Every structure is written in C-alpha cells, then in structure tokens.
Length: 165
Image (cartoon, rainbow, N blue to C red; front, side, top):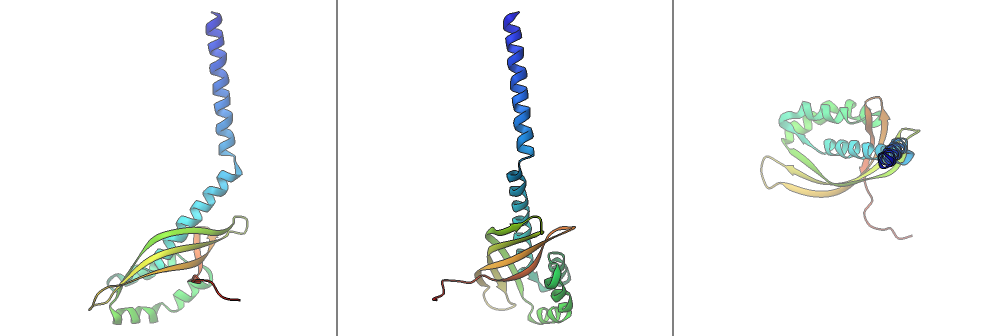
C-alpha cells in the first residue's frame, strides 16, 4: 500500500513537472521569435525564387506570382511595368529558373513588421537557341508583414567582396 502511494505521488509529480515544462516552452519568447524568423526566411526565400523564375510560355502565371510575392513600391513597379516586361519576354522567348542555395535572415523587427533576408541563388536562363546560361548570385531582400504574411518590398544584389576605405 505504501509503495503504491509513493508511486502515485511520483507519477503525479512527473506529470506536473512535464506539464510545467510544456507550458514554459509554449510561452517562451525565444521560441516565438525563432518561429517568426523561420516564417520570414521561408517567405523571403520563396519570394526571391519567384522573382527569378519566369517562362515565356506561362508568362501571365509567372507575372502573377511576382505580384503575389511583393508589396509596397516593388509591387507598384511590377504592376506598372507588367505590359512592357511581358512584351520583352515574349520577344526573347527565354525561360529562367531559380534554385535557392541558402538563405538567412539578416534582421527581424516583429513589432514593426519588417525583416531582411540574404538569399544565394542559382539561376538558369535558357534562350531558344544555344546553351543555358547559369549564374549564381546573392540577393538582399526587405520583407514587410502584410495581412497575407511576409511579402518582398525591396530586392537588390548583395555587394561582393570588400571595399577599400
């Protein structure tokens, strides 16, 4: 009887301790920050990949993907230049595909809804004739949190190498 009581107390203590640990993990600010960082990185990598992938055969779908991945001034630039860009790509008949090699969050301000990412890509551009051209590049993007999630608000080339002062 005494052994059963001790066992029951130990089980209750272990259950209570396990519950407390789970509660602390669920309400840990560092876990919340890590999740926000992971969400921003995933959205940033996908948006940068979308912005570097376009096929003249599925042009409207590709340009829609560009617009869905962006917000702010970048989005307005894409919408305003859509027709001219579509004409250029239709004439060139090129296909570009991007593959994310790696990515990192360079800054994250959850309160302001802003994040920065750096993404390394391998972009392959195939013209109607000739061999595909492959280029690796690093891009820096700014993200803004919207009602639909993180969207790309700026995108540019990352500086390469060190500069002399």
